[in-house]
Length: 313
Ligand SMILES: Cc1cc2nc3c(=O)[nH]c(=O)nc-3n(C[C@H](O)[C@H](O)[C@H](O)COP(=O)(O)O)c2cc1C
Image (tube, rainbow, N blue to C red; front, side, top):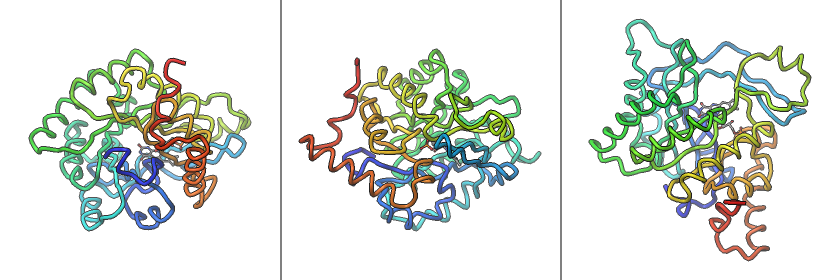
């Protein structure tokens, strides 16, 4: 999936349509592409409710959904007959709390099962590495674990002649040293790009009262409060990969300026989630029109000219 094939670089981020049940409706809202999932090998009910909280003063959300989804088998059956929309499929490891004693517990097997089942159904696949799904909070962003996973996925790609892009989605909380290792490994195993970023476990400079934040408890923060961290991580990866890899910018896109900033930091595609929740169904059409107008006014023939223009600044 290249940016040039799309009607617009604006897509829906993973987590909104986890089961691929709203494809036609979402496509009608102006998204250029939809990232479905995260899908896990086994069905998962997610965490107990309440598990999503609005922080209006910060134009942000906190969620601890715990990857509720119907699982790879059901997802594959539902998606089989869908065509039209440009779809990416985001896969994650089944959380430990959704496993039974009789199910396989190797995270790599879990990922491989979903990859093998689903990769044919989308235009690209994303490995969501950043969900803390094990009891000790380890994720596949731990560089040695990612190395093992990346090798297996690379083998599966070769064996099944998978041509379409495979990307990895990373956390903004990943420290520079580990980020560099993960990016090096992804390059070594020929991954095509990165989604930067997922939500943060940090609570950077929130306006919402501390008491409220404490009462909400754990979860990933998204929206405006995530913007700076996500942009920084995007820029770090672009500094390494330049335009050789597909970078999808995700995190804190609440208006047109945020889209332009993502492009400037090296994203050739941009996703929204929290902005869509706050701004409603016409948000994407407004952003598309705004981007078109900006390009016309500045005599930019193709928005791709804007990609990476902050580089080195
Ligand atoms: C309620 C909720 C559920 C999410 N679920 C997923 C998910 O299943 N898989 C995933 O990779 N990201 C998930 N995300 C992260 C988003 O895809 C996105 O990367 C993040 O929210 C940052 O973008 P935003 O600031 O535009 O919301 C979720 C986000 C929210 C708010």
